Each structure stands twice: as C-alpha cells, then as structure tokens.
Length: 398
Image 1 (cartoon, rainbow, N blue to C red):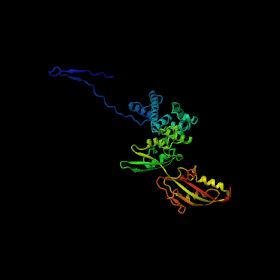
Image 2 (cartoon, rainbow, N blue to C red):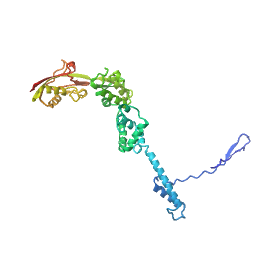
Image 3 (cartoon, rainbow, N blue to C red):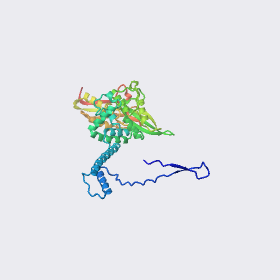
Image 4 (spheres, one colour):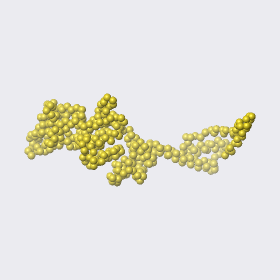
C-alpha cells in the first residue's frame, strides 16, 4: 500500500501567517487497457482465451501440453469461471417472467403484476389445495401454503408455463368502468345483476352515468334482500376476490348497498354514477292452441306455462330480454310450436297492459323503448305484472 506523501508548509512572503502547503504527489498510474473479451461465457472460451494470453506473454515457449502445471491451472480456473458465469446467468434469469425457472421466483414475479397464483388456487380449492375445506380456503396464505404450492409447481412445470401466460393476460383485461359498455359488462358480471343498461346525461356542469339494472329475482334496488345460499355464496366470493366490502348477510342488505362498493372501486375518479330501476312493462296475451290428438290438454297447458314462465330457460326468464327490446309474436310462435303436442297456435290478444295501449295481435309487434322491459309473471295475485290466457282445442281431455 502506498505511503501518504508528506505535507510541507512554506512561508515565502513577509507575512508570517501566509503559508502554503506543498505536497509531492507520485506520478499517476497509467491506464490499463481492457483487452478482456466480456462475451466469454463458457469453459471452452475461458480456457482458449487464457492459453492465448500465455502464448502471447511467453513467445519463447513453443509447446504447451495438458501435463503442464500452467495448463492445469488454466483449466481449473476456466472450470470455476464457467460455474460463476452459469450462476450469474441463472440469477439474472430469475428476475424476468419469461426466463424464471424457480417456482418461488415466478410466483413472486406474477404477484408483482397482481396475479396471485397461489392465492387463486387456494380460494378456488384447486390443486394443490383441493383437499382443504371451504373455511380453510378463506384463510390468508401462509409460508407453508406457498411452499406446498411451489413444490406442486416443481412437479408440474406445465402449470408454471400456463401461469406465465395467464398472468400478463389478466392485467390486459379492462376491469375499470370507463365507457358505457364497461359499466354494462362489469355490472352484468356481478352475481346479483342479470341485465344492465348504461347511458350518459349532461347535467350542466358534468356528465353523469346512469345505470339501470335487473337484479337477481327482480329485487328492487332499495328493498331489504333475502338471498338464497347459492346467490350469497357467489356474491361473497365475487367481493372477496376483488377485496371489496360486503355488508353482513344478517342485515338483509339491499341490492344497491351491495353494488355500491363495486361501483366505487371501479368507476373513474370524479365520475358520478346513478343506479336506477328498470321500467317493467306487463304484457297481456290470449292464446288459442290446437292440441295433437295423442296428447292430453293438461300436459300441453303445463308445457306452455313452463315455456312462457319466468323459470330458467323460459321465455320471460329475468334477464333474458334486453332493455328496450321489442316483443315479437313470431318469437312466441317459435317457442310454442317447438313443444311436443302443439299443432297450431293462434294469438288472439297481444298488448301492453293499460286501456290506452291498443291490441297488437294483428301486427304481432309491441314496441318498447329506453329502460322498458317486457314481463309476464302470470301470477293471479299480481295481474299488473302480465298474464296470459290459454284456450286449448282438441287433444285428450284431462
């Protein structure tokens, strides 16, 4: 190690307090040329480079053999450099999603972009968490869970490759509500929303987004909700996956109070959103049906009631008809004529409820607009929600 050069004070002037420091510094070291090829990465290239350096430094030596001590040291050093180079490559590869090979590295990289592969597998009780209970699936991930998931990925590298593709795809999906189509699509993804329709209005100072929804079981937005176990379980899972607040089920929350945290989390900042009810339009129909001779009239009456009912797959199933969708008699004919035992259908009355609306049996077309949606519950206790009258001809009595 070089010694610190001595410092001397000199007083050349007449003033005894005006001195100068003088230091004799050594000459600066010459710059070393960098003749190393930094592209060398493996054993053969390291060995060849060092042998070439030896030959260049000792030109008087004409022969180098594997038994020489210098060559042996070169090979040992080339082997060590090859291992270090491989370790550097592996370490650098673990920092990128495309090249990471260790399960824990890939899991952490995916989590950085919001894709929690292990958490998703546990919430859905997918492999390797397919043996846990539903209560355990709601618990946060532990170190043991992460280790279990990493070991399973190690045994199933094809699942790692699939997650490598699914993670980036998930962040490219539009989850926020920006356009009107986003409001409709995102709200219809909620388990308690069957249909949604959005439009914008200018209130003089800003634009307001209005969204009309048809809720599960046609619940009113502000009435206390009594939800089935399946509907509430899907809603709870939906909110849990997105870390959204969900009111307690025991308080019978309204549909609006359940949807409000969802809208607040995904709407644009400063964007006012108003939830509104759908305008339900009751439909009155009188139908005459010719029954096949081999069928009982009771069978056809039951089949027609199911086809035009509000159950799953029925014509007036909640959410099947869109907002403002016109009602056509031809669609009814298609549904009824597809029933076994129905020979012919005649529509004698086809109109909106209310004296001011004319009968459209001749035109076969009821015009709806805006938030209007056709309903026909056929409930004698609520005739204002639509009804149909059947007249059956032919077939077997009973």
